[in-house]
Length: 163
Image (cartoon, rainbow, N blue to C red; front, side):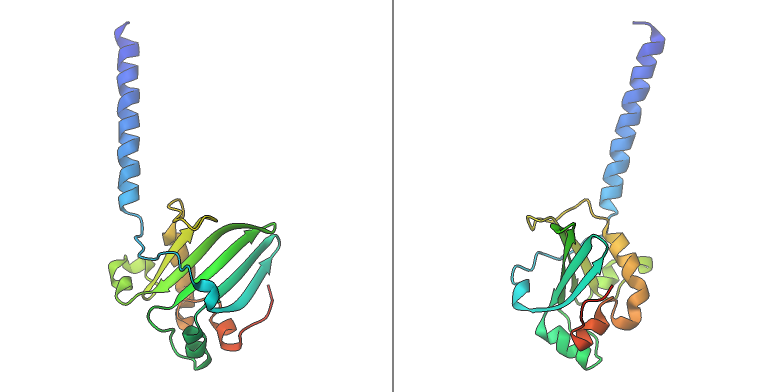
């Protein structure tokens, strides 16, 4: 083996090692989430169905959250909102958000959504770590006036189907 192929091979290994290190660093910088799958979510209130093209979302929360929204109050600590996300009629995933006292202070200021934490689960109800939870937070930030919840108004009226 001449020196050039050996150097190329060593450089290739170094690049792979650097990429692996970068991937670990990105993983370490991801948004953390305390949210676990709420097994009893269907004992709460199904308050909204959102349909957009081939996407259908079924959204659930607690009776206490509905009552707070009806009274135009922030949703109580411990509130969980769970969305079943269907594509072409097939369950793709679940997305949950949970209001946990003090959680917001543990997140970067540019991502905070009050004390709401987010989590994605596969159809098997296991945490899906591939989901970028920072994207969830960034999307919900403009809803600060609605306690960071897109469907707050639907909670107030129990909503109806609408795009």
